[in-house]
Length: 149
Image (cartoon, rainbow, N blue to C red; front, side, top):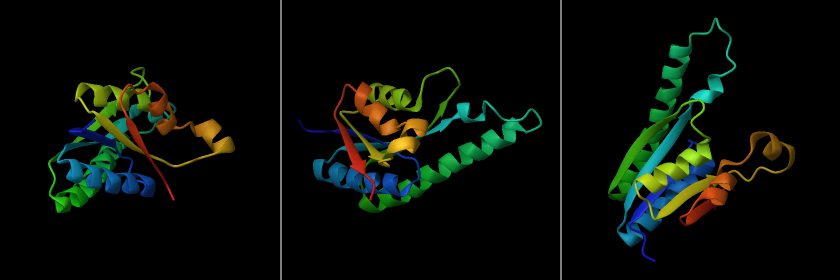
């Protein structure tokens, strides 16, 4: 299969940077298009105190998301490949991050999805879960999982 539409989900971590590097190599080699997404999850604010200004926090969180995409954009521009970036807002009750990543990949439509894996084990994996693992479980398209160092 030749991949022509490659999508990568980024979170600004070192592991995500490794995945971006792989996405650039593949996109360039295959002369494909690249879509870069970052998801901001509003559910992290479900338990904030009523005295906290939600709008200010949310705006700051979205700004960080745009900063993540801008940082990745700089790397991709240097590779001179065709790409687009999208900041996606996940509202409470609208699914989990992994589900949103897969839905975005299907809607675009991507024929390859790339995501980094932090490789958590034990208790931290139990508590935090694994977005990458859930993406692998529910995706109907090929997924390239890039492991952190």
